[in-house]
Each structure stands twice: as C-alpha cells, then as structure tokens.
Amino acid sequence: MKKTFILLIVLAAGTICFSQSSVSLLVDGANAEYTISRHIYGHFSEHLGRCIYDGYWVDESMPVPKKDRIRLDVVEALKKIQIPNLRWPGGCFADEYHWEDGIGPRDERPTMINTNWGNVTEDNSFGTHEFLELCELLNTEPFIVGNVGSGTVEEMSKWVEYINYDGISPMTNLRKQNGREKPWGVTFWGVGNENWGCGGDMTPEYYATQYRRYSSFAKNYPGATLQKIACGPSGGDYNWMDVIMQSLGTGRRGVWGIDFHYYTRPPRNRMRPPGSGQAGQQQAQVPSQGSATSFTEETYFATMRNAFRMEEYIKMHDSIMTKYDPGKRIALVVGEWGIWTDPEPGTNPRFLFQQNSLRDALIAGVHLNTFNNHCDRVKMAQLAQTINVLQAVILTEGTKILLTPTYHVFDLFKVHHDAKMLPVKFTSPDYVLGDDRLPALNVSASQDSLGVVHITLVNIDPDNTITLSTTLNQINWSEVTGEVLTSSKITDINTFDKPETVKISPFKGAKKTGDLLNVVVPSKSVVLLTIK
Ligand code: AHR
Image (cartoon, rainbow, N blue to C red):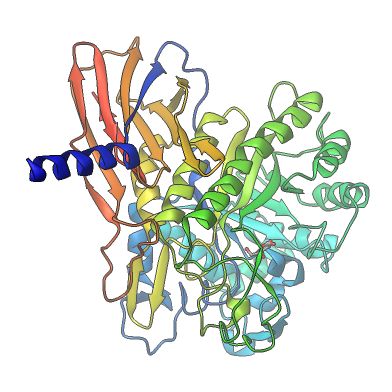
C-alpha cells in the first residue's frame, strides 16, 4: 500500500514536470509557391583564428591527407553536408585584404597584420588560387567579398577581371602566369563587409554612393554575370536597410542581394571570470557573453529568445525591402549568423574559438526553419564560421577532427536544398520558465523534385515532449521514416575524446494513423521526417 502510494506520487510528479502538449499541424501541399534556395545553407570562412590557417590550410608537415596544404578530411566532411557556397575572405578581414598580396610564388608574397583578429601576421599563403581550389574540391560556389573599406575601385575591378576574364588582358596574363589557364567564373561578389562598422564606419548614404562606384567597375565578363551583394544592416538597424534600398534597390542598380548580419548572444549580464581566456586577467571586467559549455536554464532561455529575434528582423527588413522591391527581386542574404559565446578558456580571445553544444544545434535548427519559411525573400545565408571559429560545424586539434552538433543539423536539413517550401500552420505550445514563455515548437517543410516531403521539427523545451497530429493536405503518402538529433542535456558537446555524444539516431516516434501523421517530438531535439 505504502509502495503504491509512493509510486503514484512519483508518477504524478513526472506528469507535472515532463508533460506532453498536443498540437495540430497542417502541412499544405496545395500551396507550394516558393523554392528554398540551397544557398540558404551556405557557410562563411574568414582569415580569423584557426578557421583558414590550421583549419582548412595546414602545415606541409601535418600527417593528414592533403591536396597541396588543404586538409582533405575537412573537405570530405563538408562535402557530405553539400555546402552550396562559401563566403571569403571576411568579415572584417575583407576590408583590409589586398588580393594582389595573395597571388604568385608563396615565398614572395608580402605579409600583413591581421589587425581585427589578434594582430597576427598573415603570410598570404592562402589567397585567391588556394581559395578557389578549395571551392572546387568542395564542389561549392565561391562568394568573394571585395575590399571597400581600405581598398580601391581599381583593385576590386582588377580582381573580378583576374578571376573571370578569358580574353587578352593584363589580369588574364597575370592569372595564366600564376598557373591558372581558364577563368573561374565567380558570380557572387560582396561589395564590402559591415561598412557601417569595421568596414569603414560609413553612413548608409555614404556607403550607397561607394557601392555605386565599386559596382560600376565590377564588370560582367562572358560566362560570369555578377550577382552583387551590398552591405546590409546589423540586427534591427532599419534605417540602414531603408537608405540602402531607397538608393540601390530600385531600377537597374545591379544589386542581387543585401547582406544582413545578426548573431545570437547569450545575455550580457555577468562578468567574465578572471583567468578565462589568455587575456583573462586584464579582461576580468569585460561583460561575459556566456560560456559555450556551462550555462543555466535561465541563460538558455534568454539565449533562445535572442535566437528568435532573427525572425522578427527578417520580417521587418523584408517589409522595408518590399516598399522598394515588391516583386522580391532582391535577396535578403543573411551573410553572418550563429551563436557567439565566450571563447574557450585558455585560447586566444581574438581567435573566437568556441565549443558547440546541443543548445547550438537547436539554435541552428530554429534559424534554418526560419530561413526556409521566409525563402521568398531569404535566398542565401552563411553560418559563421565553418571551422574552429564561433558556431563551427567542424573543430580540429592537430590531426584530430570532430563534427559538432551543429554539423549534424546541416546534415539533416540538406534535404531542403532547392525543394519547394510547403507552408505549415500550427499553434506552438509554450516553453515556460518562471513567468516567461517562448514557442517550444519550430517547423518547416518542403517537397523535393521526386515528390518526397520532408518536415524538420525543433522542440526547444528541455523537458517536455510535444505530440503532433499532422494533416498533409494534398500529399499522397504511405510511409514515414525519421531521424533525430538529441542528447541527455542541453549542454552536451562532442569532444575529441567523445566525438559522438550528440549525434543523429533513427527516429521511431512517427506513425501513420489513417490519413494522419502522428509524431511525438522529444524534448530538446531536432527531428527530420521523410514522407513518401
Ligand atoms: O564573424 C566574426 C566577425 O563578425 C566578422 O569578421 C564581422 O563581419 C562580424 O562583425
């Protein structure tokens, strides 16, 4: 009797703490109007910390498979997630980079100081040819950002000619002299980076004028019609967007996209503890952005709230763009996104090396679902940054390599590349913490060229499962399979010793009941459903 009573209390407590919510989800196969561009799944790699050097590009003596000095295990891992484009050389670095220093015999290339990222000496051994060789190995499209902040119109114009022109010209000759016969035909060109900040501290009016000059002399050569991308705002800087769109977004100004940046940061209400990071002692008073690996549920909640701002910003920027471009001809490019935490203790704080947890994977899932659902305007995006920097998909340590939880999200979501977006309708249950609440469930869906439907679901609630009863409107289907990414704690990470703590597993929580698709989405998980 006593035992039964205790059991009942335990069960009741379980129900209170880990309850299920029931949701009706509609996936609308009848209204597939827009395509999810694969370019939403792009990546960003800067000359920063250990992303290029000691990331992709390693010492000749390192005993790993390499092509020239490019690590092939990294290439293989990135090929598996089919990265569609790679943005380079920055970031802030782009506006102090002079491309001509990075061509020709490597031992004759001048060095420079990477002033943004720790004043390290840049030896220019990884330049234009090396980057484009990497893109060829990855089978990805290059997205090159020109130097507007400290460069010249002539410099950018010649870079385009060097890379894209096949006729007789000084730049064609120089390229051939450096060993590349045929032009590469790069079409994605950024005209500066964050020119409101590290890219020259410009006003939007001044930048718009600069854009017109740089853009006028960045020419289309046969086989390479440029898709030029103007510097966009940071976060909620709606004035920047308005001025840029008013100046460049109408008529024939040659703008393909506007490059908007937003990072998710944990709340900045604590001090970084002394001794964290190389400069920890001096930086003890710097407000902390939060550890990548050790955080409370309160911090998790507040960070998630910041992640959800992405959708609010996209909606607002889209509505400003629509004033000038109602036909949605111009793309909103989310050129830098991801979680930005404190660097790992003991690493150079300017190298921005951070670990990556299940929380970060959930944030990636929320962002990618959001981009999918706004694919009428968001036609390109780049996660910052591919290897060893910020929300990386790969971490390396000497010859060792690991795939982060975020990598696995890109692996799951690659099914959406170039698929038709299917609108979804549902009312999310709340994830409640204290008096605060956030939508727990985040969803997108698409149908690929073979008619296969994919649904990606993110449940950010760390404790509660969500039960879905799904109607698939005008979709013929008979079977569902699934995969899931989760782990026991939101702080779980993959390490070089335990690289598979957070990994993809088969998902058994979906079944067909009559015409309905019933799903139990586990707490703190990303689920992919494949419906045929
Ligand atoms: O990704 C790190 C930095 O963040 C980039 O260099 C810059 O564009 C942004 O501010």
